[in-house]
Image (cartoon, rainbow, N blue to C red; front, side):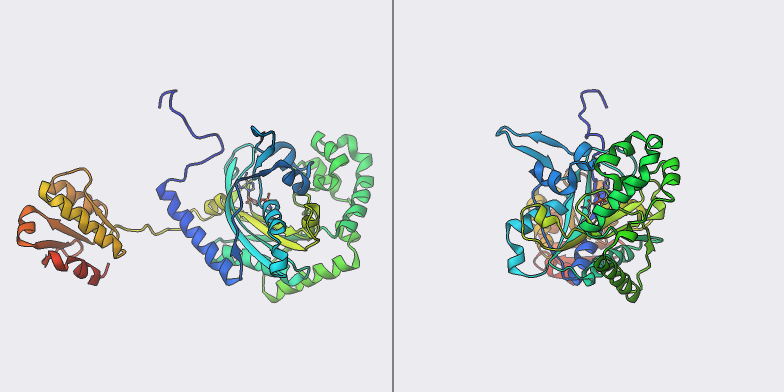
Length: 420
Ligand code: HAM
């Protein structure tokens, strides 16, 4: 490759045919299982007004403060490539008055997102998520349903050893009180905290709980727990979520320090990890966001959802075998006069849903048969000028080696009757 060759941007990936088979099978599974749970697909634009994300995800979060691809367009509008989907889906929910059409709206998506993070295995600048957002119910049944849906998809994909980490970060009132208590506790340790945590102390102290620095983890050991600040309603809600999970036999680990990195969360928060992934082991994150629609100027509507990173899921499924769509029929054409018959027959067979290929390089009989063999086809149809004249084509079964003559007028019907 010389230095004039243009390469893909760092942190982005091409999905080549070998890989796209896996994507298709993952997407099929997501669509199938989401529909069993009554979720319908929503698609939103690739870019939005920047203020949609600063208002909902939060100015002080890593995503908004450091990672967004934002620009001012020729009309002076501040725009951003979607770094996440909950805000976009909530915007669409409000804009199209979906709450008036139905009291509960259950939506799912599969989409590409953009964050300017430091690329590494499992972390990219363009990546894909599938996720769900359910609007309209404040009750714990929907929390349990959303978690059950995520687990059910991961199980059906054959992911092993996944772990559900669960917490409740309470209502807004609880968070306000907890923030004060946490700051009080951390104040005497402030000079021992990293610069990042010192910044978070003022703007977003709960995020300090996410720290990976060993000395900070030690300091936090005796910090107050958010559960001590839950209101009675928060407590009841969370206990009911747990009861449902137990009824559904969904294992969970309580993680009192799980706060998640986006500002819109209230009450239930969760993350699902896959042990095989190393540092970037979170395959899914989600939670409740009861204040989000209001933050975006809509009517107060409770909501909950999750999003799962599809690249990470595929990494965790590495050992799984995926079936390629195999070419079923190869038409071997010999001589200039056969070309129109070949192309027409290929079209007719394809219209019968038979995966059919023919030679596009005008090669010899031997080369075409070699190609058919390489594609591992079940049948080849051989059309030479002689076959054309006698109207009898040669059908070769590659697994038995048998050869059979079939009339041109009967060939589509004949091929359709075979088993592949
Ligand atoms: P999030 O935790 O930012 O949550 O992302 C969810 C998942 O997306 C992560 O667990 C991870 O699997 C994947 N992910 C995130 N960043 C990257 C990246 N740079 N490269 C590869 N994968 C990545 C949200 O986005 C929330 N909107 C989830 C949600 C939906 N909460 C409620 N509803």
